[in-house]
Picture 1: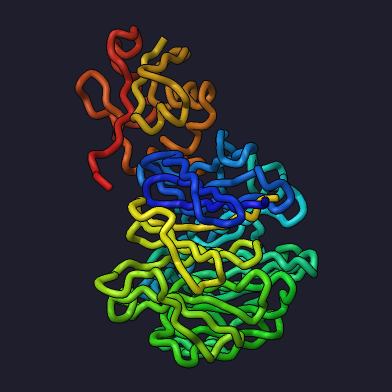
Picture 2: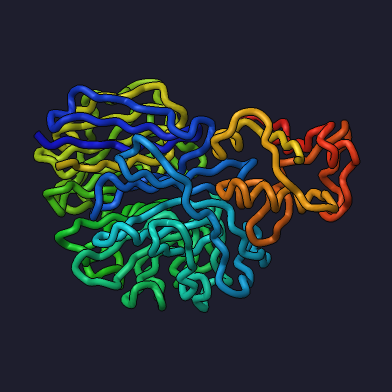
Length: 371
Length: 98
């Protein structure tokens, strides 16, 4: 029977959760890299036992780890993320110019085809690529040097490139998202970029419909429909059906349209999931009730999923990279909380069970479907 | 040989226990020790000093012979006791919890 491997990054180490296709009994390994922040881990679709992990520390900076055996053993790979050429400035929180400075890797995105090719989204926002399995990294500088770069500004977590989506149908098409700059698309493998933020409206910037400056929290797509994108923005859940050229709001009946993650069901391209959070200054679920909301209509009409989730006194958050789906049937949905829980729904969200409940604060969750 | 004491997390990263010893050509300076350390343990590159600026990472300090050498110029010769191996060169993480 096929199984699933869930890669969990936390503030104090990595954990790997594995189960067979029933997803009832879990084996938990970790902490790996105990004491270090693991901001993201992801496996290569082309070689499932190859996993990349972004490991960092306020004391010791950035480390990159790679496993070739599904997370049993690890080796350090390259950790030099040097911007290509003069860095210039972006806006600081108060609008003054601030030089680009590398802080950490937020997201790793292995190539869909080549196990040696992997992308990294970093803070301060830039996109890097490795074609030697992570040993060396070079910047795809066309993004950072875009003419709007001087107008980008950090969100509360820093000016991070946190989302990288590779279009499976169009080689060379890459979507990225940056807080707080917005979404961008490249159609030439990352050489050139254009902002794709038309239709977004953000009250916290001087021009609410500006070309850039939007605090996009997460973008998701379904592999079978890469032209359709779903976005959780700082406020607002958005949808695009033209590869980001235009967006429209699909927040509908959500109790709050603030939140961080958004994801798409593995087999139903119109079924999407969000976790509403009360507000931008109250990063916990409305009414102390942890609810995932599911739309089966690609947005606008949402239903609360509560079976198995804490419905009183719950004040945890679910961060932008901390939700994932597997490709089993029925589709499994996973998310981790800042309270250290990782929940699994083995049936598309109808029922939730905690796999683990007392981890360090969860930053990232990825699900791998194993053959 | 120069004796170097690393913080626990860097010992784990470098897969070493206790002190490490590195050969350093004269004159023995902080820069020379870090160069030798990174040659011997490449996984430490970027963890003690920034890859690009080569500056000491802000939450790390360098101690030896009960002195804080963190703010000395990196090419300042180190005390004789470090050069002779009588005293270790210590890379110390700032006392900041988290």
